[in-house]
Length: 433
Image (cartoon, rainbow, N blue to C red; front, side, top):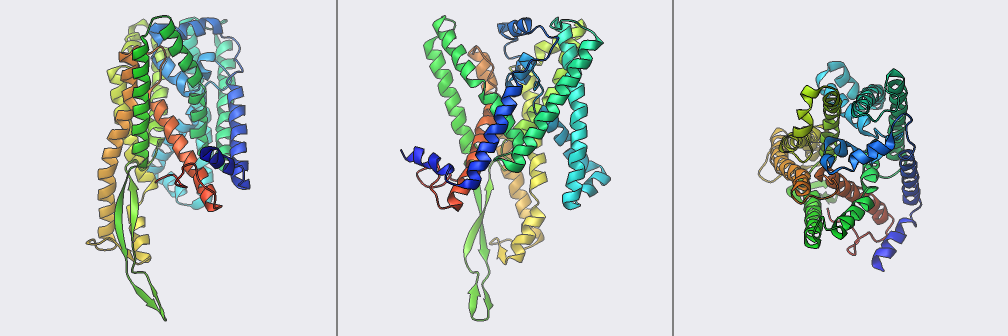
């Protein structure tokens, strides 16, 4: 009853209700686009191919999972939000290395608008390149009804237009809805496949391909990983802060103690999303080449999401993007200056430069632990899938994205409820952390 009352409170806050309904409406439109097939593809052969045990856990299934099953069905939104995320990563890297772009990023709202426009152009280029590689992959596997440049051209135009529309939907969620638009679209796509996973597990048990005990153990292992993800997202280190006493007229200000919370995982699930989308582009290209050049067929065998090499690359990428994204959103010097201006200081640390160095020290140490922990959680389900012969591919990356986005979105909704003096989702009245 308490939980139902808490969810009822969501619709009592007018602004929050509008944001949630708008987000749900956009996600419904996005999901509808994943059921509009692209012409020129033999879908029955493609579905039979994806259902084979030999390709379960292949790079094709990995990319298909992140698109919410749209890639495997060759639908209008087959590319999903991935080209936009990849373009955003590339623009952020370029903004740190090209002086003109770096200057634009420091020019406030106008500079951000120009960079966003460049990101859209790059998204279009990546979507066209990606869809062309996918067309070659389909032709190489014999799934194209009429192979040739006519099929390639129509396929590229359709998927590129769909990708740009999904990008626009994500921007609308970020502007008018709740949560990060790109993350919410990926979240909806992954969750949409959960019912089919449950059905496959039940069918495998009924047909004797998997024992009931193994199915229960697999479920418990996934629950344990989810609990670890929640612990990672909520874990933090508190840096004590002391404020000096100031006398203004007859009033005394300051003198109290507080703390600055530094989370173990300071950047959420964005490094996981970056790593997964960053891997998609080269894997799609290599897959297309391997399907047409027999000498490169070994790539399919060694670069599978359940293989050691793929998981090792993903492990390193997650650690890299954790540090990269932390450097983007956290500025120790600015944080130290703001603390100094407000009259605060860390006991035993000089205000100013020494405080900034201390913040940088803490971020690097906590960031390393959080990055390794995040990377382990991301690759652990891949090995569980391989060892337990699960009849579907459910990667750790997808699980991290689902849990992380759910926690971030619930925290945003929680803040609206508390701001309007309503109880939160938990009996304590707020989400811890």
